[in-house]
Image 1 (tube, rainbow, N blue to C red):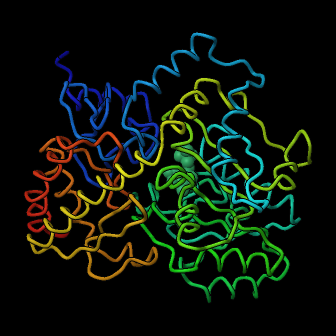
Image 2: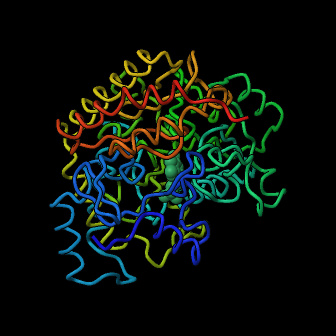
Length: 443
Ligand code: PLP
């Protein structure tokens, strides 16, 4: 191609962009080496500045459920662009999308999800959900779980997994102690800790926020009935339950992780649900959904203020609508099947190489931890031989497979991962597992 290498692109970027990246995990901080500079993506593959293709297991960190640049999604965006990029006014497409989401998340005979407010990022969605919960309850304190990531707003960064875990930071500089102090961080899957928090702060807790299934410290699966317990406990104490489906929503099933629990016989309903990633089909779009009485607390109807110049952007809405309309049962079956093939082969390769490992699954999402034994919470996730991952990651990359550049991230399959793409992954795994076996801990 142009003769430019990934190293050239990274060096040029570092001169004018902090760390050369616009989101920290892209810098390859925890795996070392030169980050990829991507110029295009199609189906299950991405192409870097040198013209080299990789089978992609990042999927833009989730949104690319159908694979990259699905022709019908691209056509929908092009058609929308031909009518204008942004109007600063309402559009019929926003209502189409809200109707579609409400329809997917409504259980007959219940008042669960009645309204949706669109924003541009998952961070805004969770930040707004918390503001609504505080506005609704008149209380300040929020419970979150260690290892759960809800975006980078001040109150939600504490022990948040994802990029913060990758960098080994406890939280973030620049967050005032008074704000961090309004967030109680509890161990995941620990019912006693939740009950004790409500006992210790009577009448002060506005909400519990939890990832529907954790996927930002590797996959942290909620124990049986844990989400129901959170809803019931919150309600018993006059607090709300915010279900963060930014990552799992529309990715693990048509109605997200909540839909999987419903299919398994659960009947609980969250007060507020946040979406992102797949809802925008690769464009900046996210949302907060919930009962009308809660969503109507938002301006202009209610006293809780929230706004956005580009909220409900028509191109993003077009991408989201096209993606969700295409995401039928067959799509989820293909993603599930591809995830099983890859996670099974990963387990076999690591076992053959004699590497201690645990693979955790939440629907089609899975992650590997280099340890024996279940990973139930953030402490378990950190208690692993994570130093094996860089060698594993780079062996896969050298073989043309792009994994998430952190052991604390889930692997994302798409409906476009066909046999050829899966074969590339499967043939790369044994050597990568041997590289993990040969890795040595840092001195
Ligand atoms: N919530 C969850 C569960 C996430 O995984 C993420 C991002 O990874 C967010 C919120 C924040 O979303 P965004 O990166 O769009 O701000």
